[in-house]
Amino acid sequence: MFAVSSMTPRTRNLLLAAGALAALALVSVGQATFVVQPGYRGVRVTLGKVASQYEPEGFGWKLPFISRVEQVLVRQQTEELETICYSSDLQQVKARLRVLYRVPPESVVTIFRDYEGEPFASLIAPRVYEAFKETAATRSAERIVQEREQVKNHTLASCREKVGELLAIEDLVIENLSLSPELEAAIERKMVQEQEAIKARFTQEKTQIEADTAVIKAKGEAQAIDLQGEVLGRNPAYLEYETVERWNGEMPWAVSGSARSAAVLLPLRSFQKAASERSSAEQSGGAP
Image (cartoon, rainbow, N blue to C red):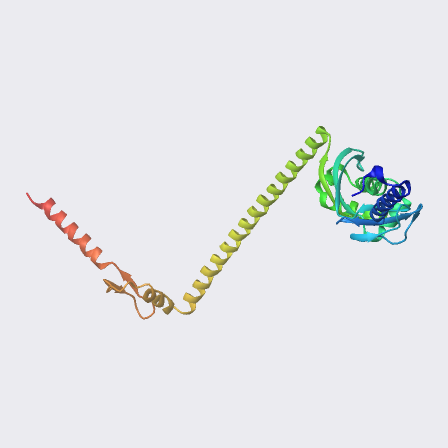
């Protein structure tokens, strides 16, 4: 190896020039490449001019030193908002909202070139405030609380219409609605009264149904009695049929009746027992 001190000035200059060129080449290679991270899209800017097409994820080449690639997030993002609005009955309503949105890839270049700041703060948040206040102004404070899902859907549709296709609003969540303590107490009392009224109507309808059922039952029994009387009048043998139907299988003690009258079962054994008891009592009383 040659010592540096033994090199001629020309050789030393050539070595320095070669080192400088090698370093410049390495820097140029580094400046000529870029990598767009997952979930992002790149916007190429060359000497202050923005390219019309976005750069996809992955590795790419660009002009060194005069071009750069800005990365824009296209994944879904979530932001929280708090707002105060007034209902149609001039009651103050405080709301905490959560907005889920994303930047469509085809809007990356337009948003980077035409709008300053974060897309949510400059484009979405003002529209969300406006849409929610417009929706709340069409309902009373009580209805805003009771129709929470309808308020959310109406606000979301209005936001999407105002923002357009530049940004995608995936969903809107109403996390909390706050009213004044006096109004909340009044709404609670009203709801309790409505529940009591519903319960009273149910009890009244139940009582009426039971009364109607009793009337129908009584009419049915009366008609059955009248029908049985008519049957017996037209056919006296019907009573004999009922007697046979209700017979318990034991022989009758006595049968009374004639050809024109229905047979009647008499408890003969009971009569005999009673007569025997009377006879025994008379004999006991006549003895000295």
